[in-house]
Structures are given as C-alpha cells and as structure tokens.
Image 1 (tube, rainbow, N blue to C red):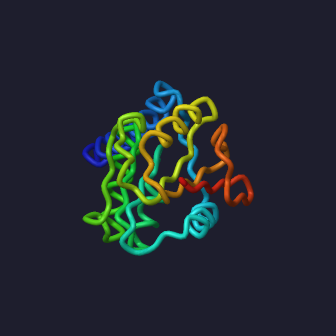
Image 2: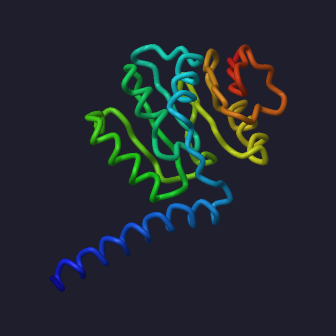
Length: 172
C-alpha cells in the first residue's frame, strides 16, 4: 500500500513539474502557450493550400498540431519552438500518430530557423515579434512561398486572403 502511495505521489509530482515547466518556460521566453483549436488548424491548412511534397515550417509550433496535420497532407513539416517541454510533447504526439519520421521539431527560436527552402510558413506569435518575422521572411522566403499567420498580421505585407483573423501572404 505504501508503494502505491509513493508511486502516485511521484506521478503527481512529475505531472505538476511538466505542467509548471511548460508554462514557466513560456513566461521566461516571453510568449505564452496558446494552442489553436482543431477548427482553426483545419482552416489554416485549407487556406495554405498545401500540396503533397511541399516543405512546411511552423514558427512557434507549440504542441505541433499544424506540423503534424501538414505532414498528414503529404508535406515535409518542421516546427520551431523555444519551449523544450512543448517540443518533447509534439514529438511524442507525432510518434503516437504514426508520423514521427515525417516531421521534425527543433527546440530553437524562429530567428535561428533557416526559412529559405520552405514553401509554406505558419506563424502564431506575439504582435511584438511580427516585425522581426516580416524582416526575416523578406530576407529568406523564396519566391512563391506562402505565409499563413494566425491572429496578428505582418506589419506591411498585404494579405492575399483574410478569414477570421487568419492572414495569407504570398512572396512575389
């Protein structure tokens, strides 16, 4: 009986540490973890018009929903996330979904992500970071590349489509 109590307490401590760690890292990194709803993910995927074989990146990939969903559509998908707890969670979800070999998650800020080879970039970051995102995209995004932004638009780019605060841009 004592062994069961110890195991339950250890499990509780582990869960609390995981939960607190996820939020603490987000607070320190300056960006809270706000997951997109499944409906929102589906809408962003439809608006992106991903084709099988395209390369997709998600800046601030969180729990990996967009990355995993893009890979399920036949894309090669990569997530960039500063929170190591979320990166581990995304990898676990991808393996559980059976696509762990078709996705990749990097525990690093979007500023260090090489974006030049991607066809589609997803982004759900704070408004204070959108200038940096736009400057990086101007330097690195290849012609014809598409950007799908959730909630906070790029400061000067003109979207080619807007629906319910999702903005789609195309690089000329």
